[in-house]
Every structure is written in structure tokens, then in C-alpha cells.
Length: 343
Figure 1 (tube, rainbow, N blue to C red):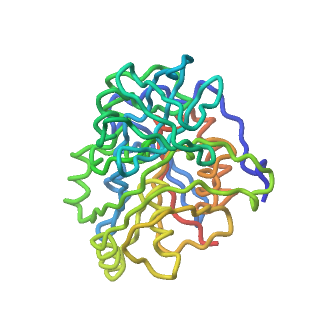
Figure 2 (cartoon, rainbow, N blue to C red):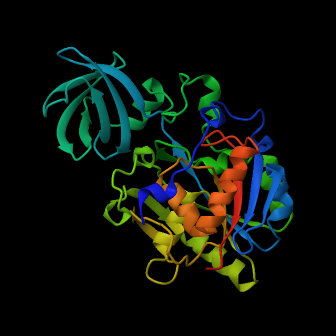
């Protein structure tokens, strides 16, 4: 398949720059992948669309304040985006500077913390934070919310709350699992009262989620790696739902990728690991039957994933409809509920 197969025209004014007034106030486009039927709804309709006995699987990753502004000790402005916190006061990071920093050079971050460049690791640098064993505490004090590049305003106080799910608990992501941003506590409780099970896993979304695909032949694309954990309690909740005839609803592409990675051997198993799963049309889904997701960028791996799940022609029609009906796109935008295509 070719990269251009996943392109579409998107007016810039449809890229949401701020969240809806209330988490549940966004719109919801319901696509039945089996029939191709499309329906315009409100996100609160999820209460009726998810059936008793279904199990919803959420990604509980928590977004770090991963962006740090600083300078090289020798001068020159830099911007650091933490990709992953490592042991021993170190981290993997992207570093933007007029000249690439050399091994051994010292970065002064937020005029408060020094970090030494230990080595280059592909597109990342391994940094050691000096006199610091808790990188998470440094980020919480001095960092900024790493809003996606298509959101143009400087992060504000509202972003610290709204670019985070209400159930976020495991710190480590540099981008939000945005399908979960539409849920608030009353909606979650009403789903439980309806007889819908809820389960959680962790996949720490990396900055690679925003990296463009740079090859035309998709067979040559190498997916970025993201750490995940699927607990035994989640495996058990899914098994129980399946035994009673319920369906597995992934809340977000990250939840879907974690589940499908954990089921790569044929059945779902609990555990930790790295996911580099690249899902494109032709992929056979083992676990997930329904997907809640936002609208994704042209030519992105996430658009390829939803095209595999809902059917390429169905997704093309749904996206054309969304543009015509002025849905809001990307992280702060509206949502889709997609029923898996039958072939």
C-alpha cells in the first residue's frame, strides 16, 4: 500500500485548538464497519451505544509536563521534549537546537536544572539530570504540557487539566490518549450502572505518534516503540465479557494497539513489553470489536489503523462526511465510534 492512499483534504479551521466546554459535549460520528452506515450523534449517546455486558478498555497513562526550554551551557537556545524517563535520573529526549548537542555537553533547563548529554540514540539523546534522582519531579515543577504541534497556542492552565484523562494514573506519556478525553466521572459511572465493565491498561504514548511517515511504500515504514502493560485483571475482565457474549471496546488506538500486541501469540496474555505494532489494512484483529477514537491526521499511521478496523472505503466516506459536517479534528476534536468491518 502507498502513503498517498491515506491522504485527504482538511480545512485548517477544522483543527480544534481548544477542548469543548465540557468533556462529554463533543460530537460523535458512529460508523458501522459491517454495513457502512454513518450516524451523527453526541458523545453522551455512548451511554446507549455501548451495550450491557460489553467491556471498555481504557489507557490510564498520564501525560508528563515533558517540554523544557533552556540553553546550552556554552550558549544557544534549546527545547527538550522528554520521550521516556529512565532509571538513575536519566531520560531519552528529543533536543531541538540550532546545532546538535555533542556527547558530554551540558544543557541548562529552565534556568534551574543541568542535564548532561550522554549519547545519541537515533533521533533521541540520552540525558543525565545532574544531582537529581527524580526526573518526574523535575518535569512536574519546571516542564510544560507538550501540546501537539498542530495546536498553536502556548499551554495554559486549562490544558494541564483537559489534556489529561480523568482516570490518568501511570505517569509516562508525552501525548494524551485523546479518545479518553471525552469521558468524565459521571459518564463512566453511568456506564457501570448500565452493566458495562471497565478495565485499564497502560501504554505510554511517545512523541513518535506525531512523526510523519517518510516512505511512500508502507512496507518500508518502521513503527516507533512504546512501552505497555496489560494487567491480568484486564485479561480476566475481557475473558468474562466474552464468555457472556459481550464485546471488547477499545477506548483509543493506544488501547487497541496494546491489546493486539499482547495477543500477538494468538490469545491475550498479561504482561509488560514494547509495542511496535503497525496496523494497516489487511491486519486481522484478534481482540477488539469496537473502537472509540478521534479523527486523525492525513497520511498518519493512526489513519491507517482505523482504515484497517473500519474498512478503507468506509473511513474515506466517514472522513468526507465529517469534513462536510464541520466536525472538529485531532486531539481536542470530536470522536468516532467504529464497529469493526467484517472483512
